[in-house]
Length: 294
Image (cartoon, rainbow, N blue to C red):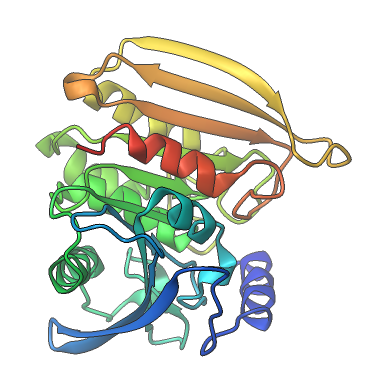
């Protein structure tokens, strides 16, 4: 196992607050549903002003993590904008780490279709709470970002757009699905160039212990081409933290089929994280998703 990633997991878990969520506004609801013969759980955030047919964002935690809204900055945005946020909990793999099955060596033998599960638990919440059947979106960090790419390659139809933070396209995703032409899908990636866990430059030989994966630019460019985007604009913005030395190169690819855009935020100098020290990540993710709300 990549020891740097293992250290990150321990830090992530040490800050977790699993059972007690206190919202500044809105409320949290425990979710439990039997899917694929297993009881799957999660936490749902409902804003104070929840209207019938409101959108839903499903947010997936990282490897070894928990369904803890406090690890993200989506709920204040959801409270203001009136959408729900679902935080599903991953199952433990044979090594004892909770996560979502994307084919890591540690996950061998899991035999769990977590893309299908994310679709089903999201549809369950849509039905139970009168949310939009159409305006559902998927985001996540690290392992949660990885499964965003897998969902895109598998051609799922529950989520209208995907936003990965520090996520990867594994070589097996590409080899298995790229030539079958999954349908176009709006996609947003936020990634640090100094990420030593999910390497910006990729890991074609799988030396990090997670399996072989593409570089971030190559992974994103696949979806630029698949969506038929033909226009690129970019700009550079400063980090929120003036002392970090980081800055963000924002790449916007547009003109795609059905208005499907691809965004890439290249957080120069940043490590493996949710990146809300440099940008308002939750705000930026919703800004992207909101383009596709009907």
